Length: 104
Image (cartoon, rainbow, N blue to C red; front, top):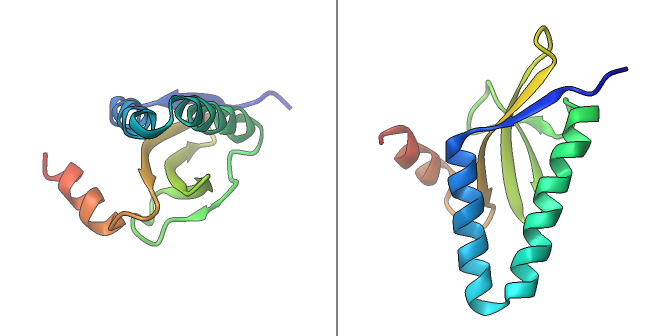
């Protein structure tokens, strides 16, 4: 079966850049490795679009974890597309972070 297309929203791209910048302050190699693991997970998502679980924070979204970071996505079966909306460190107050972004 053909893999789904995976789109990364601007918010998720900003999240990735912020994650990379934060981790790189401490360990640039770790930042590079973390970003590679997160973006590689998108390839898996293309093949297994329903991986993870329904998000308790945003019921229309699915979520899965990569190295402590939560990836929030939506699946569009008719379009054969997955859209990555946010990538947030799981140690943060997720409801507050998500609410803050929605109010922007």
